[in-house]
Amino acid sequence: MAALGSPVRTWRGLLRELRYLNAATGRPYRDTAAYRYLVKAFRAHRVTSEKLCRAQHELHFQAATYLCLLRSIREHVALHQEFHGKGERSVEESAGLVGLKLPQQPGGKGWEP
Image (cartoon, rainbow, N blue to C red; front, side, top):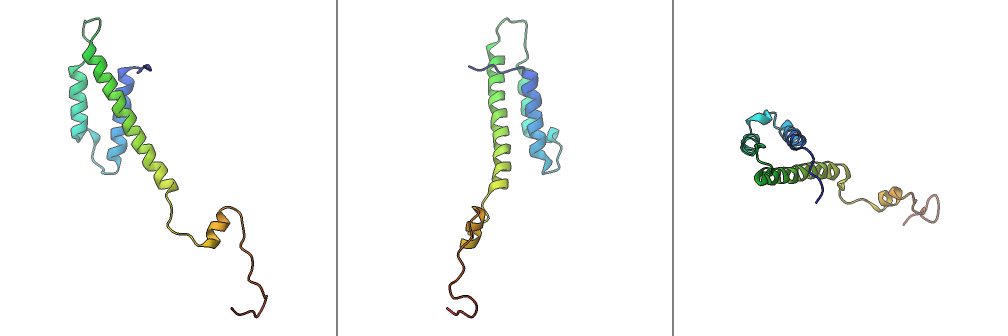
């Protein structure tokens, strides 16, 4: 299993992702139910005097997994917006995308189909 890093780093990453999510709505991220839940969970699973606190490690793993999910969704949306298709293209446009030109119509000037 890969190292999770510091719980504080995971906490800050989750707050950053909440700020990104709420930037579009204009509401402060501290007013959301997700923020209140995260604060409550992290406070309930603080490190105690125990040598091994399984619940605290489990919370950290779940938080790191959720952080990965939020980052991946944000990056997916950004990539989708950048590279999303613009619909059907004509043959001329498609040829131009790959650097090709279509041949000219035979007959030159005055040629009628």
